[in-house]
Length: 268
Ligand SMILES: [Zn+2]
Image 1 (cartoon, protein in one colour):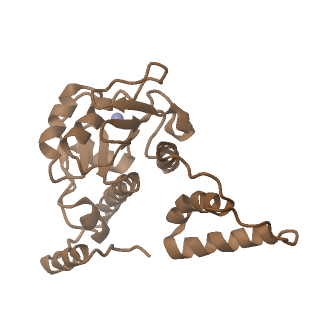
Image 2: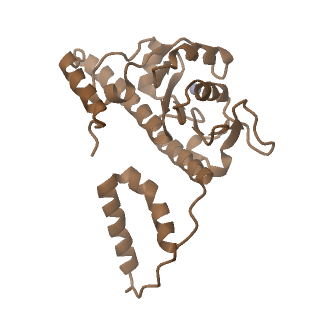
Image 3: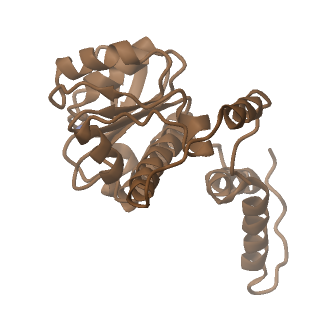
């Protein structure tokens, strides 16, 4: 694409135009999508080469990790994220680093057997769990493991989130969020315990540990993580008020229809 000719703009006019463009995108697409598209749009307008796919993926992981850390879902250095880069490789967060402080270059590229390039950082110790998901679920493009305090309380108590309480949670986390029996973090035992639950579920409580959410892409896996923690918080509060009331069969049928028609609850 040819770059646009230089425009003779008054002082401050470029900033005003950029602000209008950003607000318009945020109104049409929602703030998160606008934030995602704006760099590509600006590159297209200035005629710069598009960002390579792998670099874009790395930036998305860094941004998602920062968001989850800011929400308090990955205390200290806990938690790990990965995305499928191709049919043969994934990008995963490194071991040890605070995930909110990562840079795109820190992500580790692994093949499906867990081999990394010699110069790369050490991958998250949970890499076996991530690779186990990708090899069993070809539809999954991203895996997010966090320690959200309220959902982890349910995992610690061994209580699955299997009751229809919130519409958004039913749509995103259906049919239920099971408790996967305990296996030590990073162990093959944890991967083995997860395996039987993988078909048909996209969110899991890892007993006495944390949670795991899958998505077709990173945005979906992060959205599931946030929804799962919100659901856990609401149920705990509702129980303090005398207990949650459940959605009826008729409500669930209506939600099914909404899902089939491609609608999404509570989104602009
Ligand atoms: Zn963990």
